[in-house]
Length: 334
Ligand code: NAD
Ligand code: TDX
Image (cartoon, rainbow, N blue to C red; front, side, top):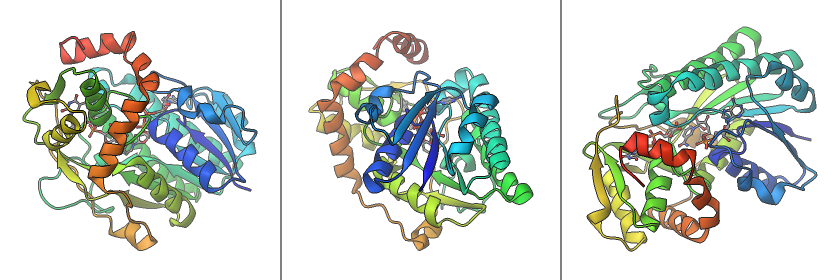
């Protein structure tokens, strides 16, 4: 039986992945280790709270004793735990270095000591840096440009080194920008949808023409599961959907779907070191048997509908520390 240690499972992608696993494989066990930072939220998995197949452990992946005590009971490790927001990494990088690099090291050491069948490190397309034309393939050089992406690149290569040096059976997916339900309202799509539903300004950085390849979180979950089961030891897999969109195009659809006018579009100071474009060659994962199944425009509309129907989930998140962060970062009131 597969017994997973999923770290960061109370966050956006981790919680969607746990939900996906339980609905796809009823006979599994999952231990979810999460520190519950501002981004971790037990509401994301409320329906599994009393499920005997599921155990939540409140703790830090940097805590070697705790991690070591969990490892004997699992045979698959999936590391989602990270500080994940580029803007926060520009303001205060410390936690990014601790969690994203050192935390990953702690997990690797315990996995090596106890032996696991699979160790999947959730990496990101941002490790390649920005690309004006063309697409990055898995063998391209890493040129990360924010403290966030640099810490993810460090972990990505550290994981690879455990394959080469210790033969730990690792796989490393590098996914593009995810969107969907349960995303903390600080990322472009979740922030803009929730602001638009409240008829608040949508703060667009710079000229709004930066490009990201948007991937619906459920498509990503299917890709991650395939990589976990069919990926070759030591290999990296790009995961993207080919949905290259400028930020202003996304903004326009969100305004349309929420019945708002373009008057909410507000141009603000650009992000420091703002990567212009991310684009991935996905030939490798496609030949493993995956293609994204969701159409971008309809998945975005469904996502807007989810946030409209689930105000209980996000309204309380946009208070307290969040308001302080928002005000300092955007230099404006929400
Ligand atoms: P998120 O910020 O929503 O969730 C991160 C989770 O990790 C939270 O539940 C948080 O409490 C937990 N966490 C943070 N520090 C921890 C620690 N020290 N110990 C234990 N738990 C800790 O992030 P997300 O958007 O779901 O991203 C998940 C992973 O996927 C990250 O590794 C991120 O780098 C990667 N990724 C994200 C995207 C994206 O578009 N969101 C794209 C590619 C890769
Ligand atoms: O308020 C905003 N205004 C704005 O114009 C925010 C939050 C973002 N943006 C722009 C910046 C980017 O060009 O939107 C684009 C997307 O920004 P984010 O949602 O912050 O995502 P990004 O910086 O691309 O990083 C994301 O994708 C890769 C995730 O946060 C990472 O965790 C993942 O690795």
